Image 1 (cartoon, rainbow, N blue to C red):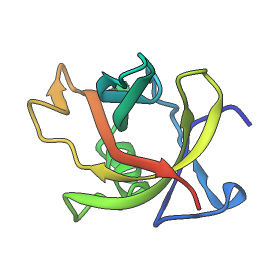
Image 2: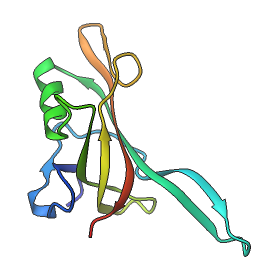
Image 3: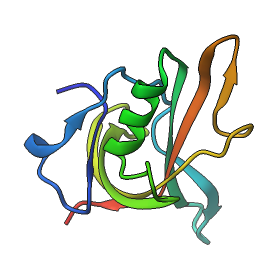
Image 4: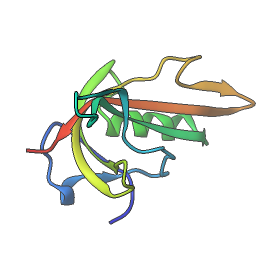
Length: 127
């Protein structure tokens, strides 16, 4: 399987995750900070992933994506996601999905919803 998926709640089995349609673009898992141990070993901290839809055709489609993340009536929600890691392998992770704010995480411009961005922060391995 090589597509982005999500489900409401932590530790959801891969087969129970919903395939995102349309698929977003993403740089994969990133880190808020990289520090180094005394021996020079890198320590990656604050893993997160940003999912971006350049254009969403309808309000219904926008609301459907928010519902899939549990964000239609909430500002944040615990989710299980299937996303690319720093090696471009798909991995299943738990995290906190954050609802986008108009003007910074989503815009309505030229009759379309544009630059729709969902941040999933505090990523951790599925247990």
